[in-house]
Length: 241
Ligand SMILES: N[C@@H](CCC(=O)N[C@@H](CS)C(=O)NCC(=O)O)C(=O)O
Image (cartoon, rainbow, N blue to C red; front, side, top):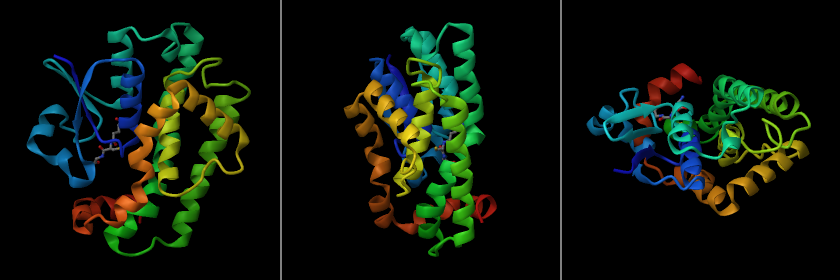
């Protein structure tokens, strides 16, 4: 039985898992979980991931959540090329360093922009106060500076000369605010050049296919039935406002 990947390409960690599996010719069945439709709260998905988050996978009787754990599972099970998760002690440590930092270091800020710009105005039928948006943009700016100055420095990729899981996980997160209409690459030649290298390594076609859904988000959200987002309202109020 092929690996089952439960994904919604709207989601950053789902895109990293998808791109990695496709790029490495890992056979899988794509199981669509429509997060904005609330499918993660259904009974069937609860059996795959009781935390109700995508991505998740099933491999026979074995289920696994958390994108980083899933990526490493695929690296180990399918013996993917070494550069993705280098066996060299210090290169791997460099990848682990980024993977450990990124959850709160950049993911939180990029996601917040996406919610503030697109989903919250739709769900609450009101614009988000400017100070909220400015403060979120400032946090994201700080994270992007760290990616350039600490994680990349003068290297082509985070772990050195070749692309690794760290770059893959980074690009999908950085593309989330882009999907909300914020051009995070403007005025950042170093980050833009890195993005271009990552795109070439992933393959332009695969990169674009994986990001098609998120880059179409503004149009998609316009036509979305706002009542579908009501399930997220308590969390929106607690987390963002
Ligand atoms: N740390 C998790 C994050 C998973 C996560 O937050 N997924 C979001 C989409 S990006 C989700 O499924 N949200 C649905 C919900 O919270 O209802 C990972 O890396 O896989």
